[in-house]
Image (cartoon, rainbow over all chains, first blue to last red; front, top):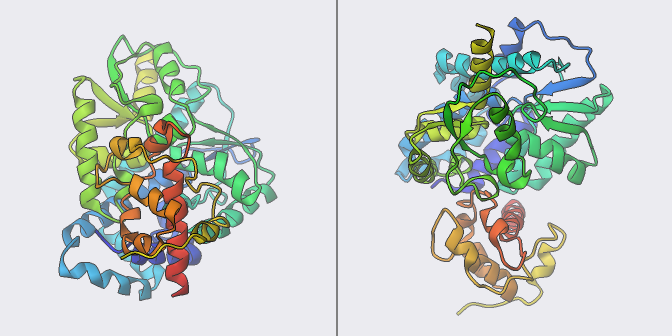
Length: 313
Length: 100
């Protein structure tokens, strides 16, 4: 286990200086939209919170940290805060494989495909799409979370944004619950899968959903993905620990203890594997941690986009 | 020997409304917690209730093993929000670290 104090100060310092917990410049992280021809002037804004985009960098950092966890090197992490954020961010970016960055971008492109197939009108403004600050909140650094959230919320308010479509549970929870509570900024927020109307293409295939804690429990949204999957012809085979009683993937511990994170992840994979069906989730953190723990898991957006492609053929 | 500070809970009040006062230490939270680790979070909540602030600081790092998954809060028979109490303690410890 790493000293949480060191981790908090590094991440908070990065967010203060670069708006990103990892110090990687936004221009390097967020390029998926360039091929999509997205409108900017729609009333409803697609907001990724950069979570899918960050995952390849999180994976690189976690793998490095796992190598040195509980060794004599662990204690030296405290000196990392003296390395300029952009420099460490660029280092992390160089160590992260391009194929992984492309994979993360593909999930967001699939979300765009699905929203378009559903006839949803939305726009995207890369200049407004920022990290929500949720990790600072989870780590207990409320002061820096509020400071960051205020900047993000003010940008959105100044641009006149009122309706937001989100792509991951962490950003959804931040914008839907924490921003109104801590910075007095309220938006109409819904995850992309909540109001979809798609063509049938599931062909009775069975899948097992892993509900992320923020969707399944905190936001009580576990019915929404099941509804759309059911409507397009998939059968959901649930494990006992799902919905309100879903079990954590272990991802939230990866910044403090990658070993603990893997241990929790492996337990969850064992439960999910018991159904024998394809595991599906709708959170980039869960997707990454369950994969690292040995699961064959795919993102909900791939399943939905794939079904729409089958329906067109 | 552990000292107790009956006023400790007052230090937490500005940080959050979730202070675990409704908890009767049944241990459901510790049983359901994916960490399965030495009465966590039950023990931490008890420390808050009796004002054992030294014990909290001695074991502070344990707080960050919490995944903030909310399963303990979901299942707590007293509605004492154990997961949120742990988050309150993370905020308290972070502020103490920053002042030191």
